[in-house]
Image (cartoon, rainbow, N blue to C red; front, side, top):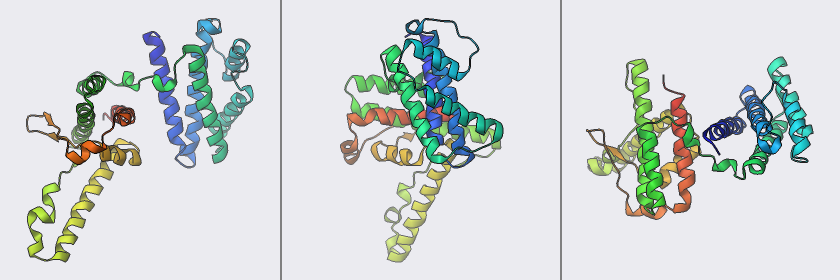
Length: 296
């Protein structure tokens, strides 16, 4: 595939991902899943329509259903024309008349769009949409370079080093977001805590009393949790995915000179598995893409 096609498929994947995420919302937020899905499918239809396997025709101003019928003439039984019409009707009803689609209907049609797009990608390009690397959509810079270095380590069998570099890339996202907010507001938000040495154990608070020590640790844990929640809500990543990421990656420290140090404990090394690399990497790439939309 040439660069143009890769970029187009990346755009389709990003739109489809936004549609799938919107399913977790409610009301108007969930309804946006229909708009994103329609745009993703229309783009995929345009890519398919202009591909040599479907005749290599030039892109023209056609409606979604027109593209579907033209493609179906060549790739017979590949497209569900009825569902294309259904999706378009849901889009028109919401966009022009603000009629919210039924939640279950929305889920069904979005799942179909996901399957339809993946079917076309496999049929035309002999790859899966999951093979399209969203890192292509990440701007060049230190964070992207760190992810590329992680990939290099992983391909060379340096699994621990690869996970360390992914963790560092994510910390770079955290500090970049912090810098963006400070530049906009004039105040530096706290989006990173390291309160390990603030525990009652290290402060020897047991001499005051067990109840006080326990209350102190609960306050420290509460502060760490609130800082984490503030960060992930501002960035916009999935909460469950974030805490899953933390459970399998080390937490690097940024030195005074701006460099990062990453140490992996014996316990953490047992949790790091090669088969978890792709999901961990996908999370970091998603975080970088979210950051790019929050450059204020």
